[in-house]
Image (cartoon, rainbow, N blue to C red):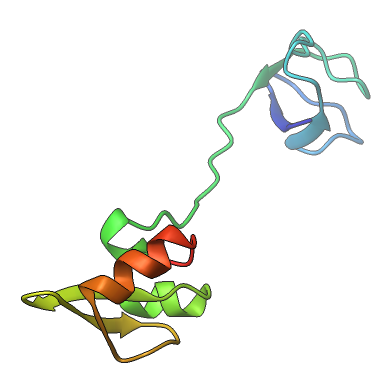
Length: 105
């Protein structure tokens, strides 16, 4: 249930704040009058600032290790080198296939 922000459209009552918030279901009608003073109100834009990471940030070795993942990058012909997390520093392609078959890679 979102918190909806309203402001007085014209005059506000003596006991009313300029802006107030109401918990409402999305399918409920917007308020048209203040529940305290009965004067007209309008829905206000409620901006929430969220930190959104890019795909590059989410897949960075540091972020993967912080979330318990291990990352390997192909470093040569048939070898993978660990870039994040716990596990062997280097594995061969055969070891990678075995781990992948077991669901561990």
